[in-house]
View 1 (cartoon, rainbow, N blue to C red):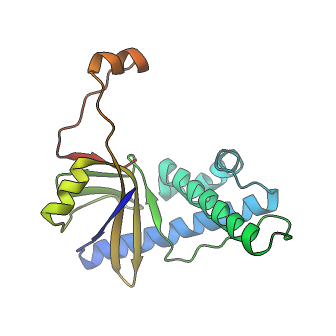
View 2 (cartoon, rainbow, N blue to C red):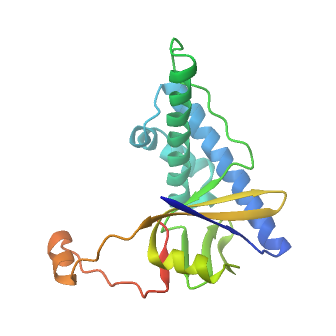
Length: 197
């Protein structure tokens, strides 16, 4: 998997929106991590069943999909912490403590971030934020030639980078085969369209 890091050129209000999103997302992740540790639950699906309603109630501005992404981020952090714990302290028992800083990354998927050409549409606490990427022609070609598996926003002191985790596109099936396999007809995206997730 390749990673394409794109620094964002944002206005001061846009950077403030993303700073607040990052802070609230980290708070939601910390809530999930605390609930998971208390219940001894670290797997993504089990965390979802345990925490989703509480996260939605406590952080309504996140919306349903970013609430799911906060649960994903906590499950991922638990998995990494357990790997480190197993390597460095194999005798340790229980669920490791996981805490997210206010500047922790925000995970996006196809529901919360989309890219058409060089124009980004990103879900924030104040609705969708639209801005242009300052991206090289080579970077744009890489985005178009791959599938975006994940998009991660990282920021500190008002400066943000959007990281795209890219995977080679699988060969496309004929539309008839897709319809037969899924039972659903799907319109294909134009070549310039990239959707995270």
